[in-house]
Image (cartoon, rainbow, N blue to C red; front, side):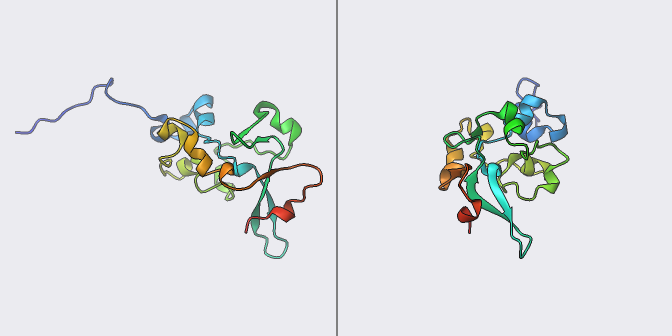
Length: 151
């Protein structure tokens, strides 16, 4: 005869970033999915010949290159009107989101990478997967993103 062990509720650990569907996350949980890689904040250009979207190494003017986070997140649309407020309905339309983007991964039912801050417990590993892993410049007058296309 085999015994089965039934987990008590105190033994269960709810990892909302993997267990709770995106549509049920509260605001704080939703925001915590962002790993701070900053790759979505790179300026993108459309190739006129092919229509293909290409990334540049030019980051939004509000990007903090050390943390990968927006320096004025709450008011970013005031300074960068084209900044996209990400929500569930936009995720499948934004094919330029990084492949490692937690919102994208979770939308398509995939797990977050081990280095994601919610899994790893710290933000240190993100620097190897985000803006800090490539030479980036901040958007500013006189900087032409076409000079910084990522090949």
